Amino acid sequence: MAASPPDLATLHFLDFETNKKGDFYLVGLASAGEFKQVFLTPKLHGLASELKSEVIEPKNFARSILRDVRESSGSIVAYSTAEKNILLSILSVEDPVLDGITYCNLAKAARRWIRKYKQEEFEALPPLVKTANDFSKKRHPKSLASVCRLINFNAPGDYAIGKTTSRLNAVINGLEKKDQQYSDLTAVQKAKATKAIKHNRYDVESMIALFDAIQSADPKIIEKATSPLL
Image 1 (cartoon, rainbow, N blue to C red):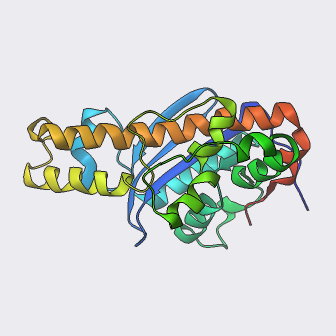
Image 2: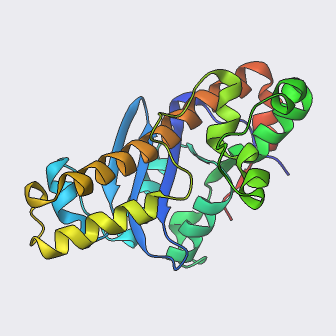
């Protein structure tokens, strides 16, 4: 059964950066009009210090964000079920901090919104990445950056699907060799750090814009895409 649509003032937009092995890099989150990034591995301590950001162990972060959501009677918003699965993999399903929290799968809402209001415009979109292979071209149209073209919230020019973890790995390699001194990284490594950080921020900010567009067009779509976290 769908949950009630969340109050805009209590939404917590969440985007983890992890790799396929489940290693954590950072998370971007926005709530109550504020955006921040938290680093989830000490391997990026030097970058966190440069950005004046925190480094928090993943389980402690998960508990903290879920407490904030519960205290505000809010809801988590993320694009797909990936963030939900990550939270449930970090914490035991018996953990009471998970109780009573709702989760909006914005990708699910976007699919319904497109079918109902934007199908013709969506089909007319050019490829997001012209040089992508055939497999990627089938996946890219449904991506957050692609869908957000429908609301003119375009990704920055250096946004690259599938490259964020490789960029962060390059930064980690540099920081490990330079004793976590960000200032000692090469220009290329610093550029990769900047691009990865921008990518994560765009994902969070574009979710906010897309949620607002869908909610304004048809609140029932958001309601149907929102369900209990457990």
